[in-house]
Amino acid sequence: MGLFGKKDEKKDLKSKVDKLMKQYDEEKIDGASYAKKMMDLTSSFQKKKKR
Image (cartoon, rainbow, N blue to C red; front, side):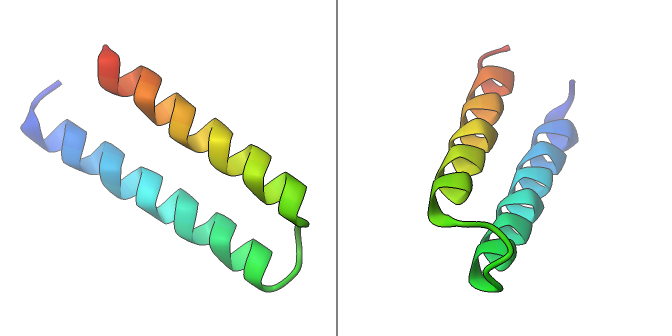
């Protein structure tokens, strides 16, 4: 994976986090679901980053 691949991964993560924050803000998900999904997103990004 080249330099641009990592930038795209960060963009993808940011868009997923933004979407998740919007769902929470609009009360489509509760606090526990928000926290779980956020942990899942960040941990999956960390795993990809280590590869």
